[in-house]
Image (cartoon, helix red, strand yellow):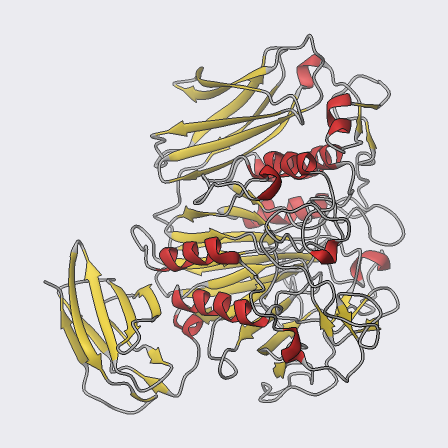
Length: 620
């Protein structure tokens, strides 16, 4: 069954007459122009002032941001948040509307996340946006996340509506929506394009927690190496090309509803940070800004190596020369956050990192002409040393990685010292793929699964990083119409975190497919399920089977007995587990549950799979 085929988009993001507005001509707005935003948006009818709202609830705090349509000076610049109780609406808070971009943010402390509540955001002119704040799904055995990237207005031959995506996702009924970047593609008209995004997905975001993570196109750049927020003229130099007020406008509109940032100190130009965590039903999502602190690559690619400063296409290069001392990927602040987050398991069963893109280069060709490249510095396989730290931090938290940006869907497994010695990542497909990419390495992959194509298996990416590819969605002729949409393999991802089995199931759905229809097919290579322990990697050594006395589902921490470096920290299922180890040890193993703990120091690891006496630790 096909969903929503060829439903038109409501309006062009560059000059938008919004739904519910009186028939008026779109106009520019002086405050937006001052920030570099040239959106042309009509003033709405007064009873349609509130466009949409987004929310999250975390640690007993509700964050909700309302996006309004343009307000005149004489209009009321204040909105109220109301909830329904006993059949009547009750006002619980008011908030001022920001004059630049018309957002209003509510922060409600002591929120009772155990109940489902109807809400509405009401403007004095009579307009309102209503939805449901869901109870936290803590009692559910499986937590479902829908994951998106690349909300392109294309591709190719015209604008194609996205109602099919909304229809399909509503049928799957996820517990949380994760938009990992490029919600907006119009580089000088964010507000108009953001309003269009909200209207497109309003029937999803109104009644479930939603994450929006700005990426390069959102902040008005083709690629982004944020370099801590400095102002620059060319993106590869590292920094922001668009005015700081534009970047702050984007982040205010897209991220104000996220849980409070864990480290809110602003970066250069007063640009803020939003990296944080969000716990949904016992699944802990770390939301990471993997471009904001990343170093620029300008000057590393000479004219002899490539046609542009971020691409190498000639084979005579040394990838090690690109591993520049001091270059950053996540930056020290986010690395500290992930290290702390890896050991905080209060109320948490499983963990996942969500970021804009993968920590590897898993594409080899791009563009309409299928241009080949050996290195792409936009990919987070570079810089290599901080990439290594990032992958190790994921492994330390036993965390699965969900991401987007590459337009090409892939299932990857990271490698550090050997192939497959770290965890998995799912890079989801673009909602609409304006810029196609392929994974077609010149050398077949090693250790491929039976029947798998030559592009899968163990590889080195262009920067010398180990990665294993299990599935990909290279563009191809599908025979489906419209071809300019389907042949670029668009869609969305779904993650199912089974808290009892401790597994993560990955689904990859094409556009215009009913996922609940009999015989509905995902992209080839999906679905695939991996375990929580798979995120620790495959190793030649293993600890003795751990048996914990007098505790169920304890937290286990394993640290190097010589250096103190933490290898992993996780909440195991039940009272026993078999954990891998990168070397023979010695290892220090700590378990804790219910405020009590136990420890064994100097534990030796043996050959993986070998029979050994169990390691028994009592919690005292």
